[in-house]
Structure formats: C-alpha cells, structure tokens
Amino acid sequence: MSQRIDTIVTVLDDKKAENIQAFDMRGRDYIVDDVIIATTLNNKHGFALLDYLKPEIKKLGEQILHTDESEDWIVLDLGDMLIHLMSSEHRSKYNIEEFLTEHEKMRENLQN
Image 1 (cartoon, rainbow, N blue to C red):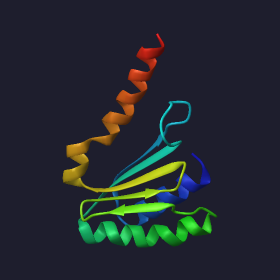
Image 2: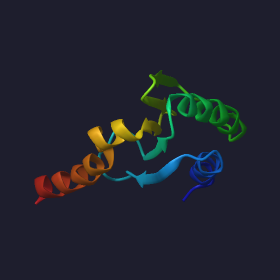
Image 3: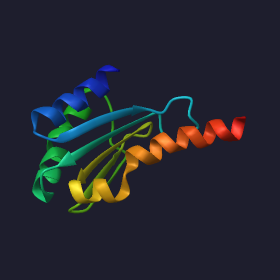
C-alpha cells in the first residue's frame, strides 16, 4: 500500500473505525484508483473521523475535492481516491465491497 493509504487506514484504525478495507482499482477501468471503506460506530463517530482525517490528508499534500455528508454515510473525494465512512446498516445495505469485486469480474467477462 502507498504511504497515503497507510496513513488514512492508520488514522481510521486509531480512531476506532471498524472493518477498514482498501481496494486498489488501478487498471480496472473504475472512476478512481483507490477506495477505502470503513464502518463508523454511530453518526457522531463518522463526523469525528472526518475531522480527524482532514488535517492528516492535508499533511500528505493531498486535497479533499468534495465531501458528501449524511448521518449514515460520508464520502471524501480526493480525485483519484474515494473514502467511504458508513454506518453498519448502510454498509450492509449497499455492500460496496461486493460491487467493487463484481465490477472487476464483469470487466473481465466483457474482455473475453
């Protein structure tokens, strides 16, 4: 993993985010190169994680281009990376991990 992914994952882990996963999407014809998904403990925890991540991302020389914030799901757009901070209910409902995995399988099937 790259230093910035390691840093982001470390911050999330240190601040008690759960089930943190990083996906390398390079070469998979996806909208970004990397995706990080983490489960929040509650809605206040999600906003706190966002507050902890902002200065760390800035220290890396990165810029958050956009955030989309709700009580159940926060998305940070870094241009070539998306970070999803999700409640356990939304994470189960939308199952982004499966989508990312299936995206690769569908792309491979189209090429064959």
